[in-house]
Image 1 (cartoon, one colour):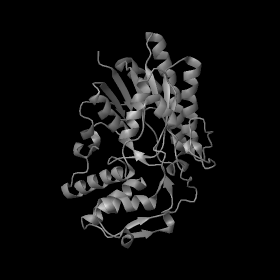
Image 2 (cartoon, rainbow, N blue to C red):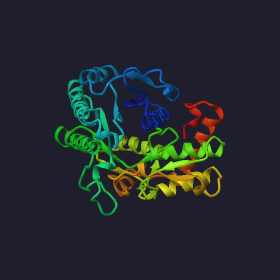
Image 3 (cartoon, rainbow, N blue to C red):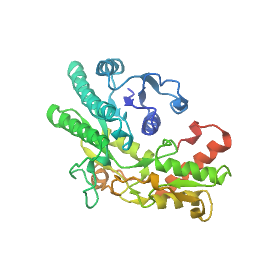
Image 4 (tube, helix red, strand yellow):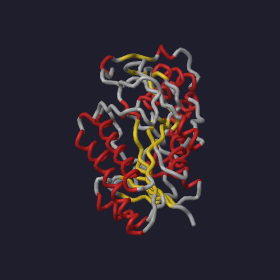
Length: 333
Protein backbone atom coordinates (compact mmCIF):
# COMPACT_ATOMS: atom_id res chain seq x y z
CA UNK A 1 0.00 0.00 0.00
CA UNK A 2 1.23 3.50 -0.83
CA UNK A 3 2.42 5.50 2.15
CA UNK A 4 0.74 8.83 2.67
CA UNK A 5 2.25 12.12 3.80
CA UNK A 6 0.75 15.37 5.03
CA UNK A 7 2.90 18.48 4.52
CA UNK A 8 1.87 21.74 6.17
CA UNK A 9 3.09 24.79 4.29
CA UNK A 10 3.34 22.84 1.04
CA UNK A 11 3.40 26.04 -1.03
CA UNK A 12 6.72 27.17 0.41
CA UNK A 13 10.17 26.33 -0.92
CA UNK A 14 10.67 23.31 1.34
CA UNK A 15 7.10 22.11 1.02
CA UNK A 16 7.28 22.07 -2.77
CA UNK A 17 10.62 20.30 -2.87
CA UNK A 18 9.61 17.76 -0.22
CA UNK A 19 6.35 17.06 -2.08
CA UNK A 20 8.30 16.45 -5.29
CA UNK A 21 10.68 14.12 -3.46
CA UNK A 22 7.89 12.11 -1.84
CA UNK A 23 5.89 11.84 -5.05
CA UNK A 24 9.03 10.45 -6.65
CA UNK A 25 9.12 7.84 -3.88
CA UNK A 26 5.56 6.76 -4.67
CA UNK A 27 3.82 8.56 -1.80
CA UNK A 28 0.30 9.90 -1.76
CA UNK A 29 0.87 13.53 -0.77
CA UNK A 30 -1.57 15.97 0.81
CA UNK A 31 -0.41 19.49 1.51
CA UNK A 32 -1.85 22.51 3.27
CA UNK A 33 -1.80 26.13 2.18
CA UNK A 34 -3.24 29.19 3.90
CA UNK A 35 -6.96 29.84 3.42
CA UNK A 36 -7.34 31.41 -0.02
CA UNK A 37 -4.02 29.98 -1.17
CA UNK A 38 -5.22 27.24 -3.53
CA UNK A 39 -4.82 28.50 -7.07
CA UNK A 40 -1.83 30.70 -6.32
CA UNK A 41 0.86 30.94 -9.04
CA UNK A 42 2.89 28.39 -7.08
CA UNK A 43 0.29 25.72 -7.77
CA UNK A 44 2.27 24.87 -10.92
CA UNK A 45 4.82 23.14 -8.68
CA UNK A 46 2.22 20.97 -6.95
CA UNK A 47 0.88 18.73 -9.70
CA UNK A 48 -0.03 15.42 -8.10
CA UNK A 49 -0.48 16.94 -4.62
CA UNK A 50 -3.89 17.04 -2.93
CA UNK A 51 -3.85 20.68 -1.80
CA UNK A 52 -6.06 21.64 1.14
CA UNK A 53 -6.63 25.04 2.71
CA UNK A 54 -5.92 24.98 6.44
CA UNK A 55 -4.77 27.59 8.93
CA UNK A 56 -2.40 25.70 11.21
CA UNK A 57 -3.60 27.90 14.08
CA UNK A 58 -7.01 26.21 13.76
CA UNK A 59 -6.49 23.18 15.99
CA UNK A 60 -9.95 21.73 15.28
CA UNK A 61 -9.42 22.13 11.54
CA UNK A 62 -6.08 20.32 11.74
CA UNK A 63 -7.60 17.47 13.77
CA UNK A 64 -10.36 17.12 11.17
CA UNK A 65 -7.74 17.04 8.42
CA UNK A 66 -5.91 14.20 10.20
CA UNK A 67 -9.15 12.21 10.36
CA UNK A 68 -9.73 12.74 6.65
CA UNK A 69 -6.20 12.09 5.37
CA UNK A 70 -4.98 9.47 7.89
CA UNK A 71 -1.32 10.20 7.02
CA UNK A 72 1.56 7.89 7.81
CA UNK A 73 3.92 10.85 8.00
CA UNK A 74 3.31 14.50 8.96
CA UNK A 75 5.84 17.16 8.05
CA UNK A 76 5.26 20.52 9.71
CA UNK A 77 6.90 23.08 7.44
CA UNK A 78 4.36 25.88 7.93
CA UNK A 79 5.97 28.87 9.61
CA UNK A 80 6.33 32.61 9.82
CA UNK A 81 9.82 32.62 8.34
CA UNK A 82 11.18 36.16 8.74
CA UNK A 83 13.47 36.55 11.74
CA UNK A 84 13.70 40.33 11.19
CA UNK A 85 9.96 40.68 10.65
CA UNK A 86 9.24 38.71 13.81
CA UNK A 87 9.92 41.76 15.99
CA UNK A 88 6.89 43.56 14.53
CA UNK A 89 4.71 40.44 14.42
CA UNK A 90 5.46 38.76 17.73
CA UNK A 91 1.90 37.54 18.35
CA UNK A 92 1.57 35.98 14.89
CA UNK A 93 5.01 34.37 15.12
CA UNK A 94 4.20 32.84 18.50
CA UNK A 95 0.81 31.60 17.32
CA UNK A 96 2.13 29.99 14.11
CA UNK A 97 5.61 28.86 15.09
CA UNK A 98 4.94 27.70 18.66
CA UNK A 99 1.28 27.48 19.75
CA UNK A 100 0.20 25.75 16.54
CA UNK A 101 3.02 23.21 16.78
CA UNK A 102 2.04 22.24 20.31
CA UNK A 103 -1.57 21.82 19.14
CA UNK A 104 -0.55 19.75 16.10
CA UNK A 105 1.59 17.42 18.18
CA UNK A 106 -1.27 16.95 20.65
CA UNK A 107 -3.73 16.34 17.80
CA UNK A 108 -1.35 13.74 16.39
CA UNK A 109 -1.16 11.98 19.77
CA UNK A 110 -4.95 11.98 20.09
CA UNK A 111 -5.36 10.70 16.54
CA UNK A 112 -2.83 7.92 17.15
CA UNK A 113 -4.58 6.80 20.34
CA UNK A 114 -8.03 6.83 18.73
CA UNK A 115 -6.99 4.75 15.74
CA UNK A 116 -4.26 2.67 17.38
CA UNK A 117 -1.97 3.97 14.66
CA UNK A 118 1.47 5.50 14.72
CA UNK A 119 1.73 8.53 12.42
CA UNK A 120 5.21 10.00 12.39
CA UNK A 121 5.77 13.73 12.90
CA UNK A 122 8.63 15.90 11.62
CA UNK A 123 9.16 19.36 13.08
CA UNK A 124 11.27 21.86 11.14
CA UNK A 125 13.39 23.72 13.68
CA UNK A 126 15.97 26.40 12.91
CA UNK A 127 19.63 27.17 13.58
CA UNK A 128 18.36 30.52 14.91
CA UNK A 129 17.60 28.75 18.20
CA UNK A 130 21.32 28.71 18.99
CA UNK A 131 21.74 32.50 19.11
CA UNK A 132 25.07 34.30 19.02
CA UNK A 133 26.99 32.91 22.00
CA UNK A 134 27.97 29.63 20.35
CA UNK A 135 31.60 28.76 19.70
CA UNK A 136 32.37 25.96 17.30
CA UNK A 137 30.02 23.98 15.04
CA UNK A 138 26.52 23.41 16.44
CA UNK A 139 25.36 19.91 17.34
CA UNK A 140 22.06 18.50 18.55
CA UNK A 141 23.16 19.10 22.15
CA UNK A 142 24.22 22.74 21.71
CA UNK A 143 22.15 24.83 24.18
CA UNK A 144 19.46 27.13 22.82
CA UNK A 145 19.94 30.89 23.24
CA UNK A 146 17.17 32.41 21.10
CA UNK A 147 17.56 36.13 20.47
CA UNK A 148 14.45 37.05 18.45
CA UNK A 149 10.72 36.31 18.66
CA UNK A 150 11.19 33.97 15.68
CA UNK A 151 13.97 32.05 17.41
CA UNK A 152 12.08 31.95 20.71
CA UNK A 153 9.02 30.42 19.03
CA UNK A 154 11.12 27.91 17.10
CA UNK A 155 12.93 26.90 20.29
CA UNK A 156 9.66 26.40 22.13
CA UNK A 157 8.27 24.27 19.29
CA UNK A 158 11.50 22.25 19.20
CA UNK A 159 11.17 21.48 22.91
CA UNK A 160 7.47 20.63 22.60
CA UNK A 161 8.18 18.17 19.80
CA UNK A 162 11.01 16.50 21.69
CA UNK A 163 8.91 16.29 24.86
CA UNK A 164 6.08 14.58 22.96
CA UNK A 165 8.58 11.99 21.78
CA UNK A 166 9.95 11.39 25.27
CA UNK A 167 6.68 11.73 27.21
CA UNK A 168 4.07 10.24 24.90
CA UNK A 169 6.18 7.82 22.88
CA UNK A 170 5.29 9.50 19.60
CA UNK A 171 7.61 9.12 16.65
CA UNK A 172 8.69 12.76 16.46
CA UNK A 173 11.90 13.83 14.75
CA UNK A 174 13.22 17.38 14.70
CA UNK A 175 15.46 18.80 12.01
CA UNK A 176 17.55 21.82 13.00
CA UNK A 177 17.70 23.46 9.60
CA UNK A 178 20.55 25.77 8.75
CA UNK A 179 20.06 28.17 5.83
CA UNK A 180 19.04 26.33 2.68
CA UNK A 181 18.27 27.81 -0.71
CA UNK A 182 16.88 26.99 -4.14
CA UNK A 183 15.41 28.76 -7.18
CA UNK A 184 12.12 28.76 -5.24
CA UNK A 185 13.48 30.97 -2.45
CA UNK A 186 11.40 34.07 -1.68
CA UNK A 187 12.53 37.54 -2.74
CA UNK A 188 12.95 38.65 0.87
CA UNK A 189 16.04 36.48 1.37
CA UNK A 190 19.49 37.80 0.49
CA UNK A 191 20.33 34.74 -1.61
CA UNK A 192 17.38 35.41 -3.91
CA UNK A 193 17.98 39.16 -4.00
CA UNK A 194 21.49 38.45 -5.21
CA UNK A 195 20.51 35.84 -7.81
CA UNK A 196 17.71 38.01 -9.16
CA UNK A 197 19.86 41.14 -9.40
CA UNK A 198 22.75 39.31 -11.04
CA UNK A 199 20.36 37.77 -13.58
CA UNK A 200 18.97 41.24 -14.31
CA UNK A 201 22.47 42.67 -14.76
CA UNK A 202 23.38 39.75 -17.02
CA UNK A 203 20.30 40.38 -19.19
CA UNK A 204 20.85 44.13 -19.37
CA UNK A 205 17.85 45.01 -17.20
CA UNK A 206 19.86 46.48 -14.31
CA UNK A 207 23.28 47.88 -13.49
CA UNK A 208 23.44 47.66 -9.72
CA UNK A 209 23.16 45.23 -6.82
CA UNK A 210 22.52 46.97 -3.49
CA UNK A 211 23.43 45.09 -0.31
CA UNK A 212 24.18 45.64 3.34
CA UNK A 213 26.91 43.81 5.26
CA UNK A 214 29.04 41.77 2.87
CA UNK A 215 30.76 40.01 5.76
CA UNK A 216 27.53 38.50 7.11
CA UNK A 217 27.98 34.73 6.99
CA UNK A 218 25.79 31.63 6.93
CA UNK A 219 26.03 27.87 6.55
CA UNK A 220 24.16 27.87 3.23
CA UNK A 221 23.02 24.55 1.81
CA UNK A 222 20.70 23.37 -0.95
CA UNK A 223 17.06 22.95 0.05
CA UNK A 224 16.79 19.82 -2.08
CA UNK A 225 19.43 18.15 0.09
CA UNK A 226 17.65 19.22 3.28
CA UNK A 227 14.24 17.80 2.33
CA UNK A 228 15.90 14.51 1.46
CA UNK A 229 17.20 14.44 5.04
CA UNK A 230 13.70 15.09 6.38
CA UNK A 231 12.43 11.97 4.62
CA UNK A 232 15.37 9.90 5.84
CA UNK A 233 14.66 11.01 9.41
CA UNK A 234 11.04 9.92 9.09
CA UNK A 235 11.82 6.51 7.64
CA UNK A 236 14.55 5.65 10.15
CA UNK A 237 13.83 3.03 12.79
CA UNK A 238 13.82 5.50 15.69
CA UNK A 239 13.03 9.22 16.05
CA UNK A 240 15.64 11.79 17.03
CA UNK A 241 16.93 15.33 16.53
CA UNK A 242 19.23 16.08 13.59
CA UNK A 243 21.33 19.08 12.61
CA UNK A 244 20.91 19.58 8.85
CA UNK A 245 23.66 21.74 7.39
CA UNK A 246 26.77 21.66 5.22
CA UNK A 247 29.32 22.37 7.93
CA UNK A 248 30.80 25.20 5.84
CA UNK A 249 30.22 28.93 6.26
CA UNK A 250 30.16 31.43 3.40
CA UNK A 251 29.80 35.20 3.46
CA UNK A 252 27.51 37.43 1.43
CA UNK A 253 30.68 38.43 -0.44
CA UNK A 254 31.17 34.77 -1.38
CA UNK A 255 27.55 34.63 -2.50
CA UNK A 256 28.00 37.66 -4.75
CA UNK A 257 31.17 36.30 -6.33
CA UNK A 258 29.59 32.89 -6.96
CA UNK A 259 26.52 34.48 -8.56
CA UNK A 260 28.51 36.72 -10.91
CA UNK A 261 30.74 33.77 -11.82
CA UNK A 262 27.65 31.69 -12.63
CA UNK A 263 26.46 34.46 -14.96
CA UNK A 264 29.95 34.70 -16.48
CA UNK A 265 30.17 38.38 -15.58
CA UNK A 266 33.62 39.79 -14.75
CA UNK A 267 34.41 42.10 -11.81
CA UNK A 268 31.23 41.99 -9.72
CA UNK A 269 32.32 44.92 -7.60
CA UNK A 270 31.70 47.34 -10.44
CA UNK A 271 28.01 46.62 -9.91
CA UNK A 272 27.78 46.26 -6.11
CA UNK A 273 26.87 49.15 -3.82
CA UNK A 274 26.66 48.88 -0.05
CA UNK A 275 23.79 50.66 1.67
CA UNK A 276 24.31 51.36 5.41
CA UNK A 277 20.53 51.32 5.87
CA UNK A 278 20.56 47.61 5.03
CA UNK A 279 23.02 46.72 7.78
CA UNK A 280 21.50 44.46 10.46
CA UNK A 281 22.88 45.46 13.85
CA UNK A 282 21.33 42.43 15.56
CA UNK A 283 22.52 39.85 13.06
CA UNK A 284 23.69 36.52 14.44
CA UNK A 285 27.22 35.32 13.66
CA UNK A 286 27.96 32.82 10.94
CA UNK A 287 27.30 29.51 12.67
CA UNK A 288 28.22 26.19 11.10
CA UNK A 289 26.33 22.98 11.69
CA UNK A 290 27.94 19.68 12.67
CA UNK A 291 26.10 16.95 10.76
CA UNK A 292 28.00 14.00 12.21
CA UNK A 293 24.86 12.56 13.81
CA UNK A 294 22.79 12.81 10.61
CA UNK A 295 25.62 11.28 8.60
CA UNK A 296 26.27 8.42 11.02
CA UNK A 297 22.60 7.64 11.70
CA UNK A 298 20.83 8.42 8.43
CA UNK A 299 23.69 8.14 5.96
CA UNK A 300 22.92 11.73 4.93
CA UNK A 301 25.23 14.52 3.90
CA UNK A 302 24.78 17.57 1.70
CA UNK A 303 25.78 16.74 -1.88
CA UNK A 304 25.18 20.06 -3.65
CA UNK A 305 28.10 22.49 -3.47
CA UNK A 306 27.66 26.16 -2.61
CA UNK A 307 28.64 27.21 -6.14
CA UNK A 308 26.21 24.70 -7.69
CA UNK A 309 23.37 25.95 -5.53
CA UNK A 310 24.01 29.59 -6.44
CA UNK A 311 24.35 28.72 -10.14
CA UNK A 312 20.95 26.97 -10.08
CA UNK A 313 19.35 30.09 -8.62
CA UNK A 314 20.95 32.46 -11.13
CA UNK A 315 20.07 30.19 -14.05
CA UNK A 316 16.41 30.04 -12.99
CA UNK A 317 16.21 33.81 -12.60
CA UNK A 318 17.74 34.34 -16.04
CA UNK A 319 15.08 32.03 -17.49
CA UNK A 320 12.37 33.93 -15.61
CA UNK A 321 13.52 37.21 -17.12
CA UNK A 322 13.80 35.80 -20.63
CA UNK A 323 10.42 34.06 -20.58
CA UNK A 324 8.44 36.50 -18.49
CA UNK A 325 7.11 33.49 -16.56
CA UNK A 326 7.75 33.82 -12.84
CA UNK A 327 6.61 30.36 -11.73
CA UNK A 328 7.22 27.22 -13.78
CA UNK A 329 8.00 23.60 -12.95
CA UNK A 330 11.01 24.03 -15.23
CA UNK A 331 12.70 25.98 -12.42
CA UNK A 332 12.68 23.06 -10.00
CA UNK A 333 16.26 22.06 -9.12
